[in-house]
Image 1 (cartoon, rainbow, N blue to C red):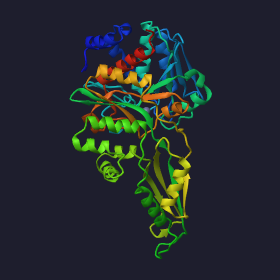
Image 2 (image 1 turned 90 degrees about the vertical axis):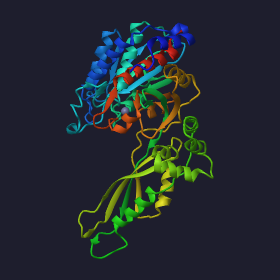
Image 3 (image 1 turned 180 degrees about the vertical axis):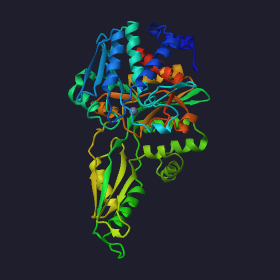
Image 4 (image 1 turned 135 degrees about the horizontal axis):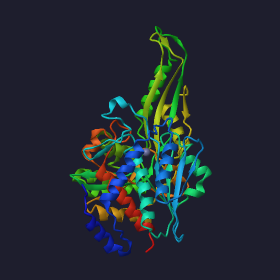
Amino acid sequence: MRLISLSVLLLSISVAHAQKSYLIDWDAVGEESVQHLVELIQIDTSNPPGSETEVATYLQEMLAKEGIDSATYALDEARANLVARIKGNGSKRPILIMGHTDVVGVQPEKWYADPFSGLRQDGFVYGRGSLDDKDSVAAGLMVMKLLKRYGVELDRDIIFLAESGEEGTPEVGINFMVEKHFDVIDAEYCLAEGGQNVLEDNVVTRVGIETTEKMPRRVTLVARGKASHGSVPTLQNAVAILASAVAKAGSWETDVRFNETTRAYFSRLAEISDEQDAYRFNNVENADESDAIQQHFLENFPYHYSISRTSVVPTVIDAGFRKNVIPSEASAILDIRMLPDESVEEFYAKLAAVIDDSRVEIVPERIYRPAAPPSQIDNEMFQTLERVAKEMYPSATVLPIMSTGATDMAQVRAKGMQSYGIGAARSIEEMNSGFGAHGDNERISEDAYVEFVEYLWNVVIEIAATE
Ligand SMILES: [Zn+2]
């Protein structure tokens, strides 16, 4: 469904910014956008191995047809990144639109249809990458095409980056671009994946904009004891040492702490919640209530628990090889997601104190996503994202969001770019269906996707077009 008619939208935008209206036929452009999404899904870029150069080549052709030059940058020839730029007059700094071209792998036997067919059915486009993140890539491509097609005069350059390797191998993608080619993507603002818009009864009620994310800082716990016969209990049993350490780490109540994003998130959420929840959201920092509120979050809404703290979650245990042998060594992985301002070394020291056993070594994983402060919620970009959201979805509440997961925005935020995650709306039923990012039968609503393209376009016009 088109949630708001073209004429109403144009009217509302033209009232506020009369000079910035473009008469776009969103039915035709929407179909063109869906076609690009389908064709991108049909290029299998499961990572590993990725093979993202095929997508870069596709994008290069599509941009060239519209008369837009682009260039590729590759650390690995099979895994190229693509950059295109539409020049503005230079009076303001550029905007970077970013989407990653790789996808996670699939178990095809669990899908209704070929995950790389781009099947269109019942108003959805199915396929790996439909939500993560070929929708962002296709939307970025469409906005570039429209800017060129309409000859939009710009104050800011608009840069499109389709980057490889986001799903676990950023060294070929965003890290390569940031370290070796930052000059071609440097911008004041970045727009990328990670938005969370909620559709209730066909109306968008929440527009979630990702302004920050937790930092993955996993560790392996290695417990060491002495190998011996299973018939004789000892105090040097690596399995028992490890189990005790994992139990302590997994039940550790880490410090509760908030930042500008999570404070605004809870206070805005309180405004649209029932009385009891509103009380909780308004009292997250009330020391007398904190324990009870956090316990309620843990039991009923673990996402809220996670964004209130650095989280420690045991995910893998590897111990023992024979039922009558006490092994000398056992290990476990803790998936630790730190708040953006957490001191990594201090946190590991606290973890060691919680485990309190010198036979357990804490081995940190290599850091591949840098820390960065949350992007601001009072600058021109956030205000524009908010204003356009209100224009398109008058009954929606705009929520700044801290993602518990990680994206390539971490790397550009660390370079000082104010970065915001946006995306297509999903219904509550759809979110509970399991057809989400990384799931089987990943799919996106065609209408919600086209509205996302429209939203991105409106935001770019509002913040970058010359008045
Ligand atoms: Zn993604």
